[in-house]
Length: 199
Image 1 (cartoon, helix red, strand yellow):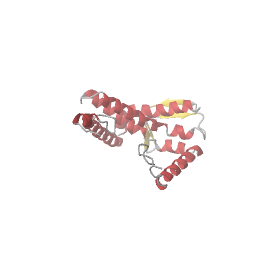
Image 2 (cartoon, one colour; image 1 turned 135 degrees about the vertical axis):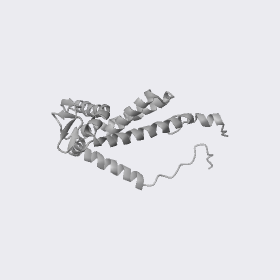
Image 3 (tube, one colour; image 1 turned 30 degrees about the vertical axis):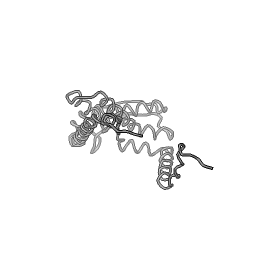
Image 4 (cartoon, helix red, strand yellow; image 1 turned 90 degrees about the horizontal axis):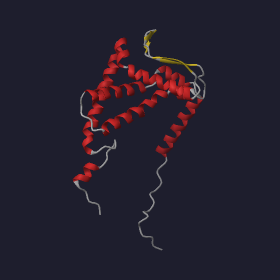
């Protein structure tokens, strides 16, 4: 027989693996991150403002390209986070690669997506420390928002990733797997192992 108590209910883990008391802090963090992401998006109107505010994220974005390029023999040649105007737009940073091929282009182009699990891990780490809102937490919200903002691949990144047939094969396989999961009904539940078996 199961019994429920208030203490057991509060100790139960929630979506983020946090106790019930931390849920409000998590929601506060998410609201602050949403506000910071909105501000970063609005800052795109000013070249120098977005260059300055997005600098930590730009550095991490380009570092992902550099590291994955190094691991997959992309032979990175140049790394820069110095912003520059290019045509009607601007480039916040770039990595030049000497060996961009069919087998590594997909992974190098989408490397900034690795910032999403990093941001999630930092988010959980901060919430596990029972944070109190103040300047250190404001800095962490700024960093987390920068990581999420920088995790989105640019159009140039997507063009590089799309050149790889490996990427298209992975996408087709993922869509087929997802479609199969959605369209094929789940097998019927088996009888419980504790139910008596009669002959």
